[in-house]
Length: 371
Image 1 (tube, one colour):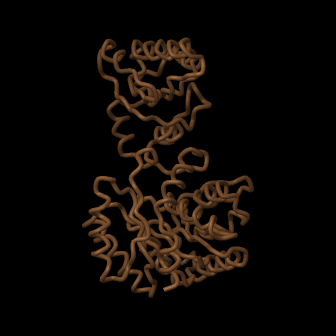
Image 2 (cartoon, rainbow, N blue to C red):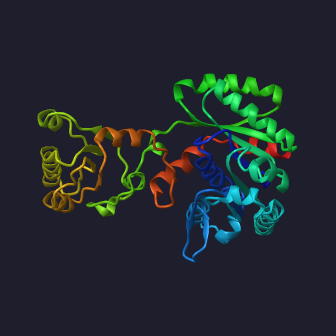
Image 3 (cartoon, helix red, strand yellow):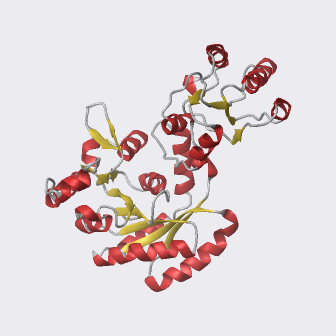
């Protein structure tokens, strides 16, 4: 297999571009001695130990793959709040930004056979500062891989719109990776999408199944969502849940349906529910000290939980946070929340890598990039 470098963009928001890039980098590392990663333009940034701000995905990739390059090289340009206005006001130069991106790419290129360049959002993101993903791919002389959602009509429409901008910048689309494809529709979507893309000479390089676990929030996600911190069970920030339950029922009904690995959302003044959960937790522990009910709790309402309840949950080591909203509002916020993979979520990273890597045809990818 040759050593390809390419640009990855998505057809829209929340399609799974970063997850796909994790699998691409992992797969390439098994086929090449050295693989680099570049996020030319970042929108969501974090502060690292040296005090500088870099794109959060760069931190994730450097940590997981033990990449040697400095974070600031892999994340040359950030779009902080107010950046667009500064550009329009003439305070920022597109030429200088392009120079920074090109310099970073060349530095990474000197040390690596392959580079995965992750764009920001869809192909047109960044156009207002004259640095769309298509423009950056053209600047770096790279073919484009597009990540699309696992539908048919809407996915093809989105692909067509993104292809038009790539054509405008003479960027070849080397292939499409379909993400979050439901198993019962896999064969149908693959068949029709391949036929739809054939006149455009764009191959499908991968078809990644839908995995609900990758969309499951952790307690840390809930802390960010509700701008709250855990009041108990602090060591379980990264706990995931198979079940989510809004409790607005009688104690009798609740007792009959307490499940392991369940997130319970209930008003903080429903102490009957809280005590029933604690009782079930200790029943499991007494029966088998090595087992755990592995529940989590989001307590809601205008009145916070009493200190005695917090202490009892601390003793049981059950992760709990308090959100001063109604239970229904909390549920609404959770269902509309988009989960992003973070470097601390090792379990989710490993599952994403395995899932994506095993559903991409790397030989087909290499052949398409050479064509």
